[in-house]
Length: 367
Image 1 (cartoon, rainbow, N blue to C red):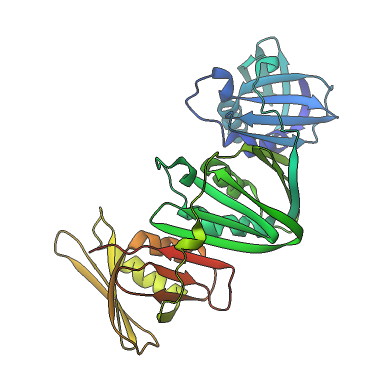
Image 2: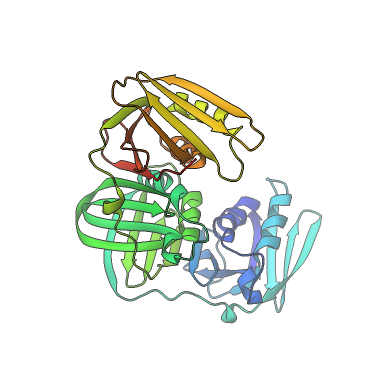
């Protein structure tokens, strides 16, 4: 493989797009590499962890059919360390790749492209939809923070995507809180549910841009393919049954308050400084026209914040994990939030006033 006098960023940009999924510790040495191949007059850069595969295409022209694999992190770090204006020459022959830039020369070890494992695309495409990148990126942001991290219920370590009629919904839960978001998509689709792995969701959040450019989502038999810009991401889906989220969302809560999001968030952030580091508990004490936020820790230190609210009903003293409240207030964008409460043993429902496309449920904790 030969690439002569190319701009540094022409190779670095596709490499950055794919190398995020390359793990530092690998069971197979070749999984630490990226596949570089010339086809259709362009350079295709591919990385995989056997569960997900990302390919980014660059306009770098070369002789079709040439291919090699090289260490993703090393090549990425080398290119980043070179000046932005650097012009490169890349020459891969045998088991070596030589990268030259000005007076610098680097020799990297390569492995045969023929041995690189690839995820083969399922042949049965069930549904396909297209929407702006910005919309899907916003949808992910509203739900991803509620995903479990290392739960034994493996299907919670991901996000449920639901296509139903003219809507696309994202649901995530770790068993203690649940985030549900929805957006309208043009067209009518039969109902279908897929669970995206946590790593796939986080990678999409990094790669998607805040632009109107189209994103195409193809639902295959046991995979999902995302195509946007010069990137194609193929991911396996989690095989499991996601909990019935509709049963978790409370209805009919009588105690309703509305707060300025930024004011509520700031008060919680200050109170969290003196919360118990292990349990992270916060008490919300609701009374007539006021909400008190109380945190205490094992050193007998205490923080108390008082916020004015329009409320005349029965009082309530309820505990929550303060991190779960901070997460939702940091990720939604509305000026105010509405909090619906039942009794001290009931989950709270947090929504955005005037919008029915987002719901956040958080279970109480005993403090």
